[in-house]
Length: 126
Image 1 (cartoon, rainbow, N blue to C red):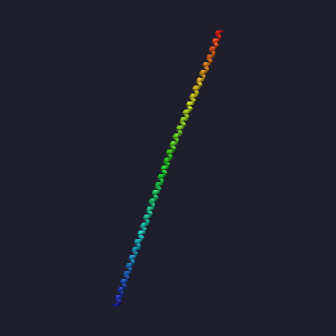
Image 2 (image 1 turned 180 degrees about the horizontal axis):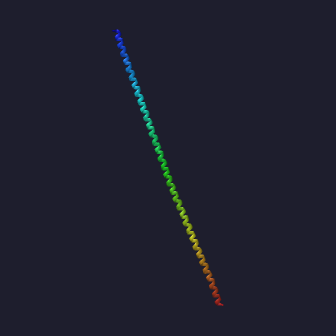
Image 3 (image 1 turned 180 degrees about the vertical axis):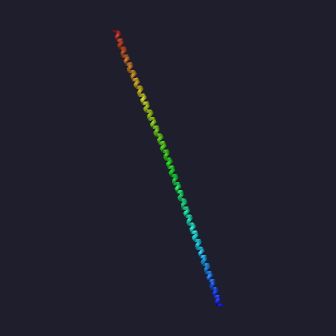
């Protein structure tokens, strides 16, 4: 009877140890699972953050490129305006020079006519 009691006690002890070991293993597995989930969550958050940073960098590059296009367009328009004004000024100067040339030629013709008229009058006076 003592042996049976000792065997039963030993069986209970073995069962209790097995149960305790099983619970400890389950706790360890749960802790490992929770740690893996936390790590996966951290990785996912890091990937999200990196994607957001890449998106922000892309947007910034797009904005800079658009600003450069606008600046280049404005500069070209200003250059074109200056060129047109210079061409208009050159054309006006050429026209003015032509008008001055015509006026000078007309003055010379008038002067020559006056000299001729003076000669004719001088000849009549003789």
